[in-house]
Amino acid sequence: MRIGIVGTDNSHVDQIVRHLNVDEAGGDARVVALSGGRGRRNDTLAVTGGIAEIVDEPTGMLGLVDAVVVADRDGARHRDQATPFLTEGLPVFVDKPLARTVEDARALIDTARAHGAPLTSSSALRWIPDTDALVARSAPGGKPHLVVVSGPADPAGDHGGIFFYGIHAVDIALRLAPGEISGVRTDVTRTTVTASFTAGDTRVVVNLVKPGSTEQIPFHGMTFTRESMVQQTLVPGPDYCVPGLEAFLEMARTGRPPIGYGDLLRPIEVLESVATALREAPADVRP
Image 1 (cartoon, one colour):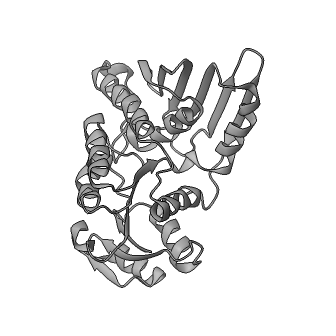
Image 2: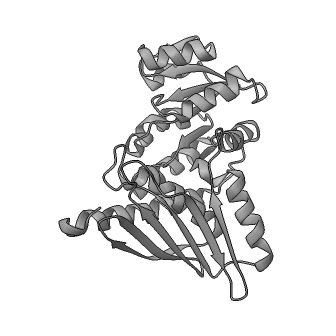
Image 3: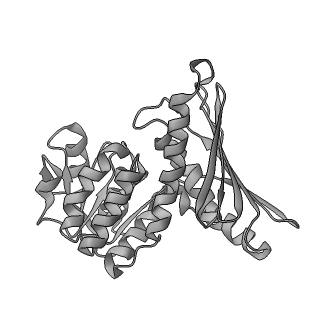
């Protein structure tokens, strides 16, 4: 399977190239093409992974690849970057977030459906062992009444503000809380953004804390029923992108997306609402 990568500045790309090309741990899948033209970053990746093709524009990979990873760090560019490949029916993994607006996210899903192109997108933390453990430990209690997930995110950060890191905590929370999103409320202080909403009939609270100058809080999740509480600190390991990559490869081989298309929209619905609230918040309380 020939994989192309769009958006190679992302550090996730190093893990992908190492896993597929250096360790050859993804079966027959190999990264064979990079977009973005020649430069120190792409030249280094090409040497590391034995990658022959470096093209200037993403569409230059058409005909060279069987599946595509869109790894650009700014979700505002993902629709334009992924659409040409979806239109050709190719499997596409859009690294988090799928988009920065619900409109763009819906357009990507509609294009995927129209052309029979498998599409997926997620936070890498959705698939890590600690998140799996939290889901498994919570399962005996039944569907939780309350889910609380906390993690770092910088509303003023590069690459899309709250979307860039906020997607991690939101995606984890929504893995634990199925159902339609309603009643999103955002509370803002100088250092925190808290989004509270209902998913189905589960109440969800996501606490996003602006990182300090040298440290950031760990990711942490809790689920509650009337009889039980389960909590887990969620620690990304050195190869934390690999489980999500393997889910994409399975999709590319089978044509079956690992996440339903309705569930691809839900975190974007939440984060677009949060981003709107941040723009409207008084300047003296914005993080």
